[in-house]
Every structure is written in C-alpha cells, then in structure tokens.
Amino acid sequence: MIYATNGAKCYIGGVIADPGADVTETTFASQSWTEIKEVESLGTFGDSASEITFESLNQNRTKRLKGTRNAGAMDLICGLDYADAGQLALIAAEKTIHDYAFRIVFNDAPAGGTPSERMFIAKVASASEALDAANAVLKLNASLWINSNIVRVAAAAA
Image 1 (tube, one colour):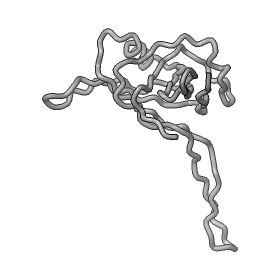
Image 2 (cartoon, helix red, strand yellow):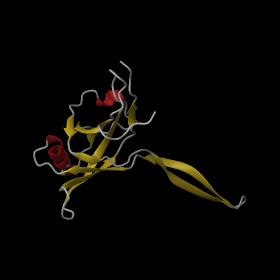
Image 3 (cartoon, rainbow, N blue to C red):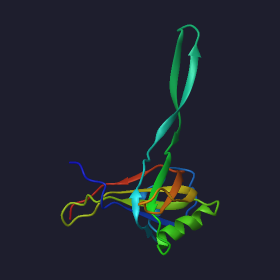
Image 4 (cartoon, rainbow, N blue to C red):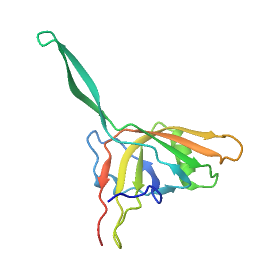
C-alpha cells in the first residue's frame, strides 16, 4: 500500500550525543519533541555507501567495495513562521556545534493504530530565509547533516 506525504510531521528534540554505534528506538526514548510547523518539503534521507575502488592488474578490472555509510543531508523547506517554537529551535540549533535528535512521523497509521516514524541524529548545518518572487511565501530552508543511521519504526495496528 502507498501513502501520500501530506500529513507528515517533523520534530526536533534536544542535544544528543553520538553513541559511537548505530542508534535504536530506545536511544530517543527520553527526548522531548517540538514540532517544526509549516513544513512544505522534507527532502530526502537514507544511507548510501562510499565507493572504494581497487585496480586489479591481473584481471584488468576495477573492483568496487562498499566503504563508510552516509545517511545524507535532509533539506527542510518551511513557510517562515516567526512564532513557531520548532522553527525557533531549528534556528537556535544551527548556531551550535551539537547534534540534535530528529523525528519524522508519517500519515500512514492504520485505523486506530500508530503511524510509522523515522528518527536520527543530525547537525543543523544551515537555517536560511528565502525571499523568492512576488506571490510567494517567505521560507525557512534548513539543511540537516545526518550523523547516524535512520531508525525505522513501522506503523502498527490498534
């Protein structure tokens, strides 16, 4: 079954230390979440491997191996809301060197159940205002440098 992205929500938590290993759902259990409102686009995220190559002389062939994993940078686009606590937290996080907890909640809950979620640790690399053309909404664009694996929590029935 497929689902629309509309209804998805993005949350920022507090400062969180990199545990030095893959994070799990329990890593985020003590977080207090603040919704980042007026989100227009969540961008993309997910692991990809760095390429390691080796030129084999006797096979006359380049061998490819998987290197370190990179969960990418997630680019949020929001309608700028000066009073939104989530956007203010995002802007404040950009001014620090720390990693923060993030949570995405999808709009895919079964009747009476709970929706699927994604959680990760990231640095807020940028928080810039975009003032486009006439007849456009002021935007807050933020880039999140993901520094952990993405924890996937499946939707659950009631």
